[in-house]
Length: 515
Image (cartoon, rainbow, N blue to C red; front, side):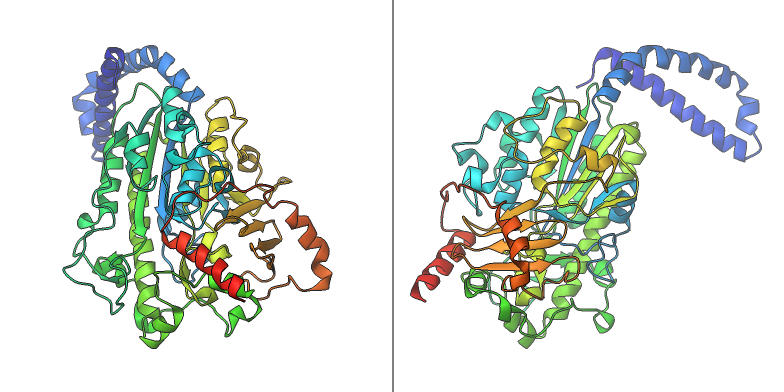
């Protein structure tokens, strides 16, 4: 990894840093060290010159090609402090990252399912283009995807050191596309001997206080790996990717995180009765049939709403602490001033809103996602409410790192918004759950079109909870027409089969035919 010249530079840098710190400590204690070792300071002048002389070329290369630190989170909705999704959530580390860059408050995934969302982000193509709409097949099974253009491979060809740990792709894509893949460190484990919750369904759908220590959690191990990576010296720019598992189910967290959210004072998400009364029947069927998550009816009848919210919040705070460890490691490294940091989730997560749980909906709670980008040349503490999408990350990183744009990418570079978050932005964001089930989001509205022709329209500025469907309001016809123009013109046939999404899509269509 390191050249002989660079190894020599590292030794000089380490020696210099060690004695600067020693000197500073001595100064605080009466300048004893400085007086006793006056010759050290004379040597430092010579060392500094040597360091400058041997590092000029490397510094120039680094400045031209900034590093990239990609942080993916699984199933994180807007329940982070800087987005205000839950008034009690504690996420000081994600919040401080937002203060260092631009927080996109109107960001969207291309699908409310792990596999298609991540396949889209990494390929730069919409699900409607690739045919990957649900939990399978993997991205390389799409006939239109050029594997050489998958994000980590592209950066490796551009001369970056590329490495990853955790979940960036769904399943086997991590080893396939990251030459230096450290593993998932236990994935969604560890698991207790038996389920902790009373829910009789899928093993993953469990929640409670477990395990005993943070160190047993895979995300803690992933953060430790990142710390080790950032302690290294590289002779080329790096592209490091971390994929944290929590708060994806099972919602397990050690006791200290659970204790942050006492049940007796815990606030539930805001909901209204009969929220689905103005939702088309197809939309209800698509988001309720063949799903494996507990129903809202079961959750309420079994007294599990607060425990589920509690454990989700605990998982979010635990994950946030791991993000903090990584940010601290970056801040303490030589790369702090020349690294682009991108934090995002693959989609959102319902916790009772719209009378449902989990993802797999194209409402805000299902497909909306946090997105924060920080780094050199990026506005600090900016908030951007323009509609953006995970698909935009790839072309953004291409431009920020000085590479030639790929004309096949279907997203847009966010560079202008990173420089001026309020600049005019002509684009909308798009998300889908199967062909012709599409959400188009603008700065003001969310428009949903279902495959049976039914529609929803929400005023996201005045109705952020999406409680009032305006699609049948005659005064909204111009708004509807404008958003319909951004629907896909073509849909690749569905690839794969037999996943929860495949089954839900088919069940809703079959039910619609019966009616």
